[in-house]
Each structure stands twice: as structure tokens, then as C-alpha cells.
Amino acid sequence: MVKATKNYDVKDLKLAEAGRSRIEWAGREMPVIKLIGERFAKEKPFKGIRIAACLHITTETGNLALTLKAGGADLILCASNPLSTQDDVAAALVEYGIPTNAIKGEDGDTYYKHINTALDSKPHITCDDGADLVSTLHTKRTNLLENVIGGTEETTTGVIRLRSMEKSGALKYPIIAVNDAKTKYLFDNRYGTGQSTIDGITRATNVLWAGSKVVVCGYGWCGHGVAMRARGMGAHVIVVEVEPVRALEAVMDGFEVMPLIQAARAGDVFITITGDKNVIDEKHLGVMKDGAILANSGHFNVEINIPALEKMSQSKQTMRPFVERYNLKDGRKLYLLGEGRLINLAAAEGHPASVMDMSFANQALCMEYLVKNRDKLAVTVYSVPEEIDKQVARLKLDAMGVKIDKLTPAQRKYLNSWQEGT
Image (cartoon, rainbow, N blue to C red; front, side, top):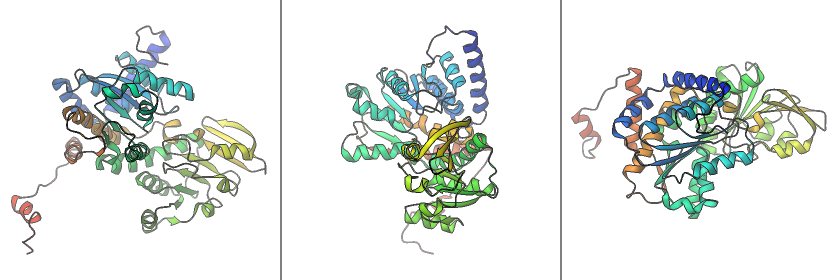
């Protein structure tokens, strides 16, 4: 575990130096979070506020962390996925004075130990990516709930869990679903996940996409992006979806849509991205062609039924980093990437900084909103306030040098009137 201490050896110092350079490089593409950080440094909206953040420890997260620290936050970090941590970034953040509890490849016990270490800070605000921090707080560390003002959640998977908690009455403090912001899901989910997923699979396998049959399981915004990018690389894309409107949209977007049991016989590469469990199940594994590649870009490693794959296999071996070959009892071979975890972070660097700029801008501004409105919010899952969403969009456009028109007073009046029809 990377600890908040200055007692580094030479290797740690070199690692931290590399991490600082990479954080700075990502910051070049994050002008919105930079502007917010400059304001935070002057106003100190988080003075006296303890924040525990369970996020992917990447260069982009590093820029968010420095922004929150500039705003006066007493911040502690832990990893939201055992394979997503960039160790050099963790080392750099420690040197910046931000306790960071994360190691790439950590086991399950260490993963939850780190979450509990973050909770030991008695946070006023939780910042989550998948809701493991919130879930642990609500089940194992309930004595700390009285300290909490509110929280934010980054992912589709996490929001699903939180809305389930709200519905059952388990949720004990207000949380803002950052994933619901248009400046998050329309860009991070679609363009970020699309590019980084294809990047992760390419790095892990060096597969040729052109001419391959790629099966994308799930056609939410992340699935949109993956399907779009796979097709852009020349793949023949098949979409699998259970929700009829999304399935219809995939058809209208020009993709072939079919049940997974049918697609399982045809696919060369399978990518799950639904947020649900056992999407690729034993019956699907049983009919896949020899040499099929299995990858997941959903938050948890449950979308591919790995226990079923283990049961069907007589042996397995590591072929290259993040690629395991399962030798099935019937003689076929299937290849699982990244232990079934987020392949875009396990084998690559995650989303490009430019889209994470908007996502983390939403995180920072929503945490500020929670502090400012701490006595006004009911215990529920909120969408990102529209004014924050639009503020992030305006800041991004300004940073890109893009100017847009504004409605005239007459146009605004016309749109708000029900009497004028001509």
C-alpha cells in the first residue's frame, strides 16, 4: 500500500516523479477542472471538510484530487477496482500529501481493507465509483453515518445500486448521481468508454478488428460507444440487448441485433457492458467457437460467468499480460481478458483525459453543492442540478474556443408562451 509518508526509497521517488509527469500531461486536456481548481484555491469551499473518495487511481483522478485539495479538503483516496490503479500516480499523490490506499492487482481482502482505511477518516462527503464505499459504510461502518453530509457517484452501476438502496429505505444520506449529467454520460460513457475499451482489448491481444465479428452486450451509452468504435475499426458488430427501445435504436443505427445464444455461435470477440451479472452464462460459453475472446467493460467482474468457465475447463494458462486461455474439456479454447474486470483500465489507461475533464468537473461542483446545501437536501438520489451541467458545458466550450448563440428576449418569450403560435 502506498502510504502518506515521506520515507521513500529511490524506487518510490522515481515512481512518484513519473506519476507527477503523467498527472501533469493529463492536466493539459483538463482545462475545466483546472479553472474550477483555481477558483477553489481562492474560495476554499471544502475548508474543514473530510472527503473519502473510492475511484480509479489514474492520472485524471489525480487532477480531481489536486483540485479538491486546493479547495481545502482533507482528502483520502482508495481504489474502486483492484486492477485499475496506476501505481506511479498513487505514489505521486502521496507525495502531494494525499493519502492514497491502492495497489494495482490487490486482492479482495486488501481492496476492502483500503476502503475501510478511507472510511476511518470519518468523512463528511463520499465520492464513489461503483458504490462499494457507500455500501461498506451502510453495512459495516454504520457508526460513521452521522458524520456524512452527502455523496457523489460516478457510474451507471453505482447509481443502480444506490437507487435500489433508496427504494428499500437503506440509504441514509443524499447522493448526487454524477452519471446522470448530460456532460457525463453523453461524453464519458459514449466516447470515453468506446475508445478506451477498444484500446484495452487491442493492447491485451493485438487483435485485428477489421473483419472480426464483435458482439457488444448492452446498448446503453457505453454500449453505443463501444459498438461505434468497433465498427469504425472495420468490425462487423452484433448488438445484444434486453430493453426493446435500445434494441430498436441499435437496429436503426445499422447494427445487427439478435439473442446472445445466437450471437454466441458467431462472435470472435465478446464485450459485456451492461452492469448486470452472468450476461455471458454457461449456455453461451458452451456454443462459442474455438478461440473466442471474452472481455468486460462493466464496472464489476460479474458480467461473464467466470465460475462456470472455470467449471467447464480442464486447465488454464496465462498467454500474455491480461490474457488467460481456458482449455475447455471439449477441446475448445476461450480467452478471458483482464480477469473479467474493466478491460479499459486493466490493460489500458482508461478514458482519455478530455472527457474525464467534464466528469470530474461535475464531481467537484456537485461536492461543492452538497456542502453549500447541507441542511436543505432530503435523503434521496439526486440528478446533477441542471445549472451545474450547463456550467460544465459552457466551460468546456470556452476552453475549446467554441462560441455559440444566445436566445434573444423575443425568442425566449415566444418559447415560454402558449398563446403565440405564429
